[in-house]
Amino acid sequence: MSKIALLGTGRWGEKYLRILYQKGALGIVWTRNPAKYEALQRSYPNSTWTSDIQEVWRASEVTGVVIATPAHTHESLIEQALTAGKDVFCEKPVAFSAARLKELADLAQRQGRILMGGHVLHYHPAIEILQQWLGEGKLGRLLSIHAERMGLGRYPLQEDVLWGLAIHDIGLCLHLLGKPPTTYKAHGQLSADQKLLESVWIHLEWEGGLQGHITASWSFPERRRRLTLIGTEGMVVFSEEGAPSLRFFSHSLLWQNGQTPLRQEGTVQAQPLPSIEPLTAQVEHFLACIQTRSAPRTQVASLLPITALAEKLYQQLMPVSVPSSYFVHPTAVIDEDVEIGEGTRIWHFSHILKGSRIGKNCVLGQNVVVGPYVKVGNNCKIQNNVSLYYGVELEDGVLCGPSCVFTNDKYPRAFIDRRNEFLQTRVRRGATIGANATIMCGVSIGCYAMIGAGAVVLYDVPDHALVVGNPARQIGWVCECGETLTEKEPEQLYYCPRCDIYYERNLRGLQKLSSIPS
Image (cartoon, rainbow, N blue to C red; front, side, top):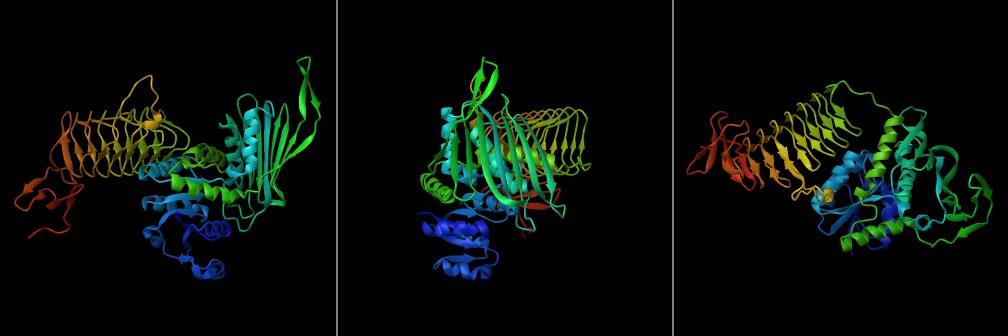
């Protein structure tokens, strides 16, 4: 049995604590103030508690973590856990943007780790039955879907109602229908302190006329948790108010003469539900995925459409004016869900695709294409006619010379779709890629490496290496300043006359000496 660390012991954390303890899977419990939970510790004897997060990362017996901390801490804790080699289950929301969620999914893939999102209703037996009915066409043609999730919230509010409540029903709509809406519109009301959204009303439309309505509020006198689907051959109501119930109404539409719809009232049938706690089923699924190394039903990559839609709705509700801290030429095109850092300049006819993140003080020349879901660090310079495709990542201070080329498909064919096989290419801090150079996908360009003009790079390039030719071969070493280094024998050191700095070999290439050798 895998040992799981629990991060957070609040209202939801306490629920996961009970389940993990009952399953014999509880390893370490991390909370910032263990003394605050002395009574809880007595309820779970022989459990280990700590306030040192590094103790969790170092624990070799801990193979996975459950994150139930405040939402704003999720992204950082996930990144730390994956880097430490742990499988991760995180309560919703996993991230507040599709771009950040994509980054975390890519990190999990690189680390060979499981990253599962907490959407508990996806594991509810009523939803599984409802999904089966939709697949069988029991409701006929679906006309509308209505969701209510309301009650009195805990004050002061810790997160917006969109991310705290409505995200459940946004996820259910996309899960049941299998596709995002074509149009969407949201209205909201701020809390009394005007800081967070307290209530939202969301309208969704799909192709074919199907409409959806979601109401979520933390300012409502009664607790309501209800999902209603209306079809031409039947209607269904799933309620979580009190004991969960699923009722099928055989009401239908009878088309008279092919034109006039008549309502046909039918019977009401209560569907028996198995006595399964969805939260327990969700944890059991996570533990099973760790054992079998199989992808979770709610793996983070599958939650991208949910997060993307929630992010767009949030932008409607809390509009942010376009900042004047960066410059975009009028001919450039910037898609939705793009982040651009302060001081960055984007010039003529460039296109930044959705989900991309560009750091501070970057310069993008004419006809530059970035994305989708590409990350560019701070202080980068991307010169004319460069395309950074999905899978390419530039760290800080990278220079891409004019018309240099990145690929992302190792075996390209026009008639074969290999988007799921794209390889990642990483250009590390301070590296320079010369004009018209070609970088084969899947390679890593080391820190401060120098790629000569026209070179064709097929393999990883070490830190500070100077490579040229087709295929590229190493002909020397370069300093951080770009000067070619001279070798000092017999010490096997490398010297930059411009900076008066010595370098020595390491496993990744060269590293700067902290002091000048005597």
